[in-house]
Length: 230
Ligand code: ADP
Ligand code: ADP
Image: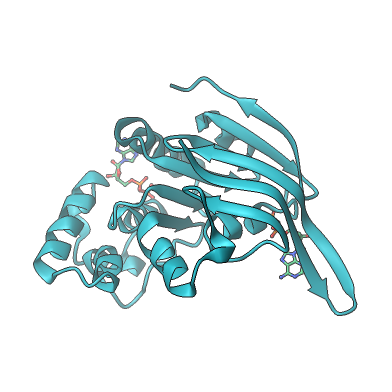
């Protein structure tokens, strides 16, 4: 089924008197259970697409649909709920809260959802087991390696059981061995749990994990490549 659908999408940034079209008439449909990589050089419009897919921004023209619903017709409260419950975000900079320990970081999205504390704790413990970090529960992010920090971020992104994970250059700050480990991990998650994953990157090597590679250049889709990774 179609999970996210961009049709005829334009994003125009205003800079003083001039306008800049960062996305030009983008059509892209993402199906539930896909692993899609959006690949393009710096400045090609990847983050702009990601912000639309993450319901963090609205197009100037065209339609963005989530589960068949036009996001521009949603109330801010509904968008906030989608961002909090349906979408898991992973970033290059990990974005962990430095003063919270590992398990507290993982529990945070559940606390925002006002889950009961016992449930949140148990769920966070389970997730830390999955990412193989049970022994670092009480450590602060500063006491972890880059790869470990990203695994905490992945555990956190999974806490609310999102229907899609949006990953923005998730290995950008990791050495290549650790990066491969993180990608293998996301790939497993995709295969075993049928998680929908959308990853943006400038690195063609990361595209090998995808079912589909969307090549973007200067705000347009150049071509879409189907891979057979199933
Ligand atoms: P990528 O993620 O592929 O590097 P972006 O989506 O960040 O690309 O940016 C696409 C283009 O839009 C770039 O030329 C960038 O300079 C421009 N851009 C991005 N955000 C803004 C903004 N807030 N205001 C003006 N221009 C922007
Ligand atoms: P670092 O960032 O210090 O390289 P990693 O996050 O890569 O740390 O690895 C931390 C832990 O995960 C280590 O104990 C390591 O044994 C384990 N690990 C790393 N890569 C793999 C892998 N490919 N398969 C299984 N375990 C791994």
